[in-house]
Structures are given as structure tokens and as C-alpha cells.
Amino acid sequence: MLEHLARKWTRKEKQTVQEELDLSGKIPEHVAVIMDGNGRWANMRSLPRVAGHRAGMKTVKEVVKAADEIGVRYMTMYAFSTENWKRPRDEVDFLMKLPQEFLSTELDELIERDVRIRMLGSKDELPSHTLKALLEAEEKTRDNRGLQLNFALNYGGRDEIVKAFSVIAAQVKAGELDPQELDEKVISRYLYTSEIPDPDLLIRTSGEIRLSNFMLWQLAYTEMWFTDVLWPDFSREHFYQAIVEYQGRARRYGAV
Image 1 (tube, rainbow, N blue to C red):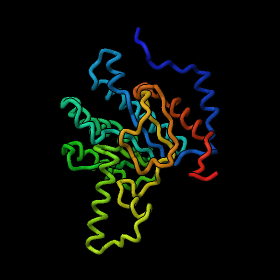
Image 2 (cartoon, rainbow, N blue to C red):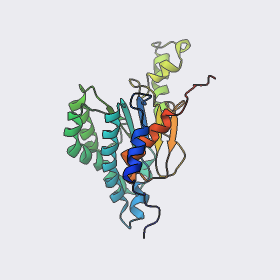
Image 3 (tube, one colour):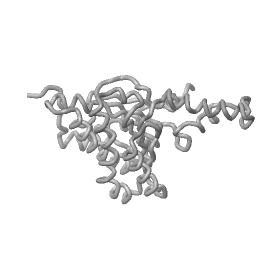
Image 4 (cartoon, rainbow, N blue to C red):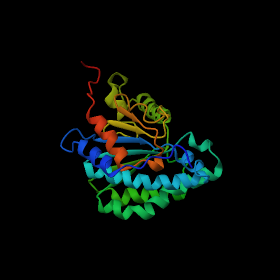
């Protein structure tokens, strides 16, 4: 008997969490997700870690559909960090194939849903097949006006900030930018997320309670929701749970 596997939702529980969700109320405009626990999910089943990553791909599809259906406008999925290159080579190679595999099977449906695909992160180290799949998806969906699905790939929060300040410093040196004009809004224009609002809600699965170098600038006032559920077991009901809790919070931004 496997321990710590996700408990199945009863029909009554599913109905209850859906009834608690206020679709006319406070739906977060931007939801960010740290998809954690794929490897542990596979290990608990005596499967290779890559099996967990493939199972997690199905969860991405289900959660994106759920977000789109309730009116979320932006969703950012932490797919591969700048630190993930330290993992075993065979696992990294598999992870680099996942965007191509996911988009080859799901892109048509995403286009039907009017979803726009965008990549956030450094393109420099990515294999050509990975980058090609993402760029093609961006091009095919660039005119879509529904949910914007951001894949944070080869992304690191500190790396993003360093790159932004490197460009800022060069423009100041060239006389193209007045350092006296620098403020939060100006700096935000140099980040990968320059054209989208900061996340309203961050979801992290698998029981870890940390940011792991994810959107360090953008998450300054984001509401956070953590769950012990491993990402492949994360369902639309868990997603609704997070939204319901978000709807019950008061966001004061430092005010009373």
C-alpha cells in the first residue's frame, strides 16, 4: 500500500468546493504556479522520475482549463529553473523535450480556447528543438485574446533582475536613461513580465514552503497558497480550493 497518495475527492466534496467558489467575486487576474513533486510522485510508485514529469504534464492541461473557465487572465507555470541544469543529464534532456511534446498534443485545443502562449526566461542555453517549439507556439497564438499561459523555462528570479539591471546600467551609461527617473515602474519594464500584471496568487504543491528563486520581484504582495499534494495529483478541485481561500483574504498592500 503506497503511503501519502492523494486522497480521492468524493462527489459531495467536489460539489461543495465548487459551490464555495464565487465566480462573480474576486477571481485572481494572474495565478503563478510552482509545480513541485513530480519526482517524489514517481519514486513513491517505483517509477523513473521522468514518469512523474509526464504525469505532471496532464495536470498542466487540467489546471489551465480550470483557470480559463473561471476567468483567470494570466497563468505562469514554473517549468524549469536556472538551477535545474544541475539535475542528471538524462532528466534534463527529458524535461527539454516536454514543451515540444506538450505543445504537439495540446496546442490545437489551446488555440480553440483562444489561449496565448508565452515563454519567460533566458533563451540562451535552451536546445534548439525546445526553443523552436515555444517560438512556434508563441507565433501561432500571438493574436489570441483569452488566457495567457506563460511557461517560465530556464527562469531564475535573481538572473532576471541581474539581466534587467545590466540593460538599465548600459542605457544610463549611454545617456539613454536618466537614473533620477528610476522607480519600480521603470524597473518592471525591463523584466520578462513587463507586459503583464504581477501575480495575485501563487500556488506551490508538494509541501515545500519557499519561493525557489521564482518571480522574486513580482511576488512582493502576492497571496500564497501551499499544499502537500504532489503536482501530478493536483486537481481542478485543489485549484478551486486555492481560489476560494484567496477570495477570503483581504489584500491591504501595507495599508490598514
